[in-house]
Length: 323
Image 1: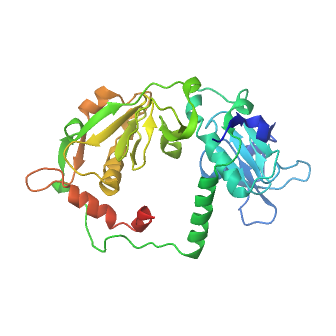
Image 2: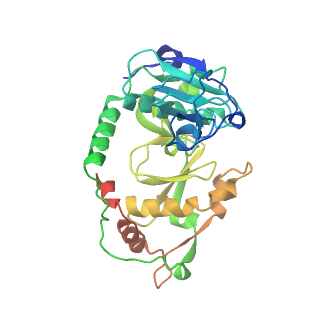
Image 3: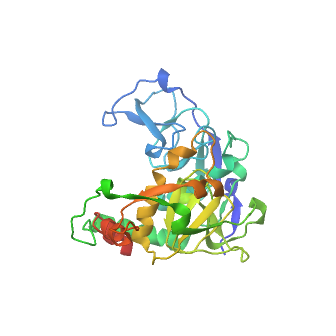
């Protein structure tokens, strides 16, 4: 079992160079002397602009992790090159040798703790105490490396089904979510009660599909082949075995054989309604009971599950779903 240790055991957190972008000379990334400027954004690997290198200001070192401690709290990225940074951004210098792909693993793991800092909490005082695996997950690293090599050699973009289907939404029908799916709320699980293991724990959040960490709590109910909706309205189809906390509603179909293609279709439709949970509104059981979605329908006005499955199979790269 991979032991958890404090972040400061593996990385030395230092405050970044703390510059204001408005005071710097911006340039194109291709220009000579262009340096990435990393801010608290969670987009584009944290890089919000490129600026000219300044002889009187040292850059943050390459092969480090940048971590925002306010704004998009715990947005963590691997930075392979020297860079400048804005305020409230920490630089994590590895205390031992890590491969770039291992640094990516830690960046992803650190970001998975974002949910702990909702509602304006900052991480400047607690960053060094965040618990992370003592060693990178060897199986995951192996899969990432194999996938990376495979991508370089060839990406099979052909769809599973060589067929042209159109989304004619004028023929779709409205369906009540509760009549299509049985639903169940996840289990209450505090941070202190979590035990490190190999079962994905789904919680509220978009990052990493809401998977906060892997646990081994045997009392937690495990699900598979289901769609989840969290308190923010984010929906994901999960083909793998998982457990979840009480910020998650698990949806399983009542009368149909569900698979990854229909599951992905439904999750995509549900995510079209995520905006309804803006401004502090939460998606709860009452929301689900009032939730209607529009779906492809058969002549007798039943959900056309076969069409949903075949439509997803006609999308490019779907062969990768069987990898």
